[in-house]
Image (cartoon, rainbow, N blue to C red; front, side, top):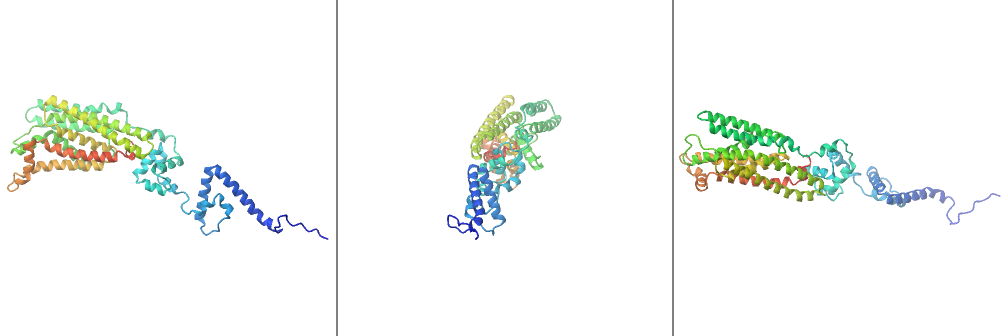
Length: 423
């Protein structure tokens, strides 16, 4: 008589428990995994990513048991890219590797057109939150951090060069006054060439250095505006009164004042770059940096205006009083244009300089055109303005309007973190 095994106490069939044993083991393992996941957020994130990847790889596969979804089932139910930030991380890997803080990555993303709405597609609330993840995930070399933290050059290298244009301008004015006859134009031309060379050296070594060299048209416009400030008012006055009949008076006060204004221009640009970089390092987000950098720009512009006014006043005390507003507006215009070019916005500065130079040239040509028969009305507006308010009203109005336009542009673009992340 054979021994028959007794039935299980719970009444289940004898062959049911061996089939359910693996399922129970899986359930137990998944429960243990779920508890481990709850204790370890990093593991939970990995399980979710694994689940989403599995769902993308085999969308027609049979779903796992309900007990198995305790740890990874929720991730498998959502379809989409397994790691949406990974493609962005590879696209901007160089930026992330050389960054010294998340805000620098946020500035670079902002420069490439990434907005808070774009960051929402990567499951982040804003650009700064996305930059923090990129900063945490991309390894950086130890040798790149000190280079990225460099600010503008030390003042010891360019402070003395800033005085060179003013010194050359004083020597040129003295040489022109001492020369006589036909030697005077030659001395003036030689001094102008020396001044251009000195100004080029000062700008290339200081904080107002720009990247690529400007084109010929931009150079001509930038050279025409200071030349008009020195001799344009005298030429326009003679043209309105029927001249010129030879040479026309020049303005040495404007020449020397603008030349010595290179010193406060470089120092104010250095102050703005250093302070903006510090605010970039201490800000907690792009909006906070924008709110802190815009008052800094306006304050620096006001400080430069005071320095420019002082240089022009000293020139007038040394060589006699003359038109002041036109030279002051021109100095502010040139400083803002160079500041924008130094921070990567040279195109906007070039357009405004070209418009200002074209307006002055057009006004001057209209006076001579009005002398032709039947074209008197063309030159009448400029002639009337000069007779009523003086020749200085033209550069003051033109350069003042252009400077205000550049100041508005600078307040918009230089308040971005992307304008300072590579300085």
